[in-house]
Amino acid sequence: MLLVHLAGELFIYSGAYVYAPALAGAQFPFRALLGPALYFYAYAMMSPGKSVGKRVYLLASVGPILVVLIMLPFIFMISPAEKLALATPSTRDPELWKIAVFTCLSTTFVFIAFTVLFLAMAFNLHSKHCQQLMERFSDIEQRAVGWFKAVLFIWGAVWFMYAVEFALGALGWRWFGSGIVLPIFEVIALTLFVQKALGQRALHSVDKGLPRASQGRAALLSDEKMQRVASKLEQSMKEGKLFLHNDLSLKKLSESIAETENHISETLSQLLQTNFFQFVNGFRIEEAKAELQDKGKLVTNIALDVGFNSKSTFNTAFKKVAGCSPSAYRNLLNDNKPDML
Image 1: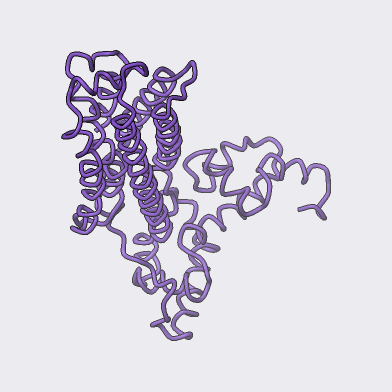
Image 2: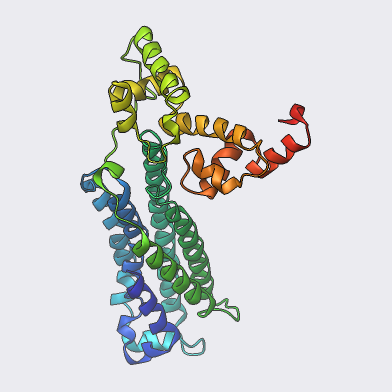
């Protein structure tokens, strides 16, 4: 889709349209599929093991169909010679020019609407994916496909700027970077996406097909049962220090305390008002606070010792719990200012 889109723009800006004016705008229907294409990629990467619903495919097809319908007057009412004449202000027919401007602006509006819709759907899908991971794993960095959200922001910004520039160009307004700056940005965004996508390790079914936790529905376990499960959880963390295992998962914890995954998830969400990820990392942070009192120990080593797989993940989790970075926390300890902790 991206190659067709870029080829169509190059066809116009290079002046090649003079040799085949009938092809001008042929990329517009494909352009409306860029947003859906990113969503389908996200779905294949992060969703449970099932196919995309027919309604989503139908919704994705509405965009290009609308574009084709909008373009019908431009296709059948304007001959190739008249299209060439529209390229020059002195030779263009005012009435035909109105049709051309309407076509450009309307197809651009459809492009923006469907791109925003499917980018929003992709954001929502990614958020649900991360939430599901936090219900099952203590380390979600590799599974969360964190780079995808940044790519969505970049594509959204690039395509919005493109739509604005294209609409202004249809009205006759141009700037010195028209046809140059945005194609370069699009190539950079495409390169970044390809590099990240190829570098992403494959997610196994356990990483994608995660059952929903019991948060948001009535508790099925009795209070007494959840209290017993919570007691086992506390004991496994404080006495067994299971949180020190960097690959700790809900499944492994379930096997360790002889409770089902569903019972643990329900206890965490209903009784303790948290999820597996936050529960485990809370103990890791408390352990890290104690180790930070040792001035000679590197923060990176402390992060690995308490169960984190990287310093960046440790810093993010620590700041979320303690309100400051590990280094800042250590400085506060050294300054003997417990009232600020």
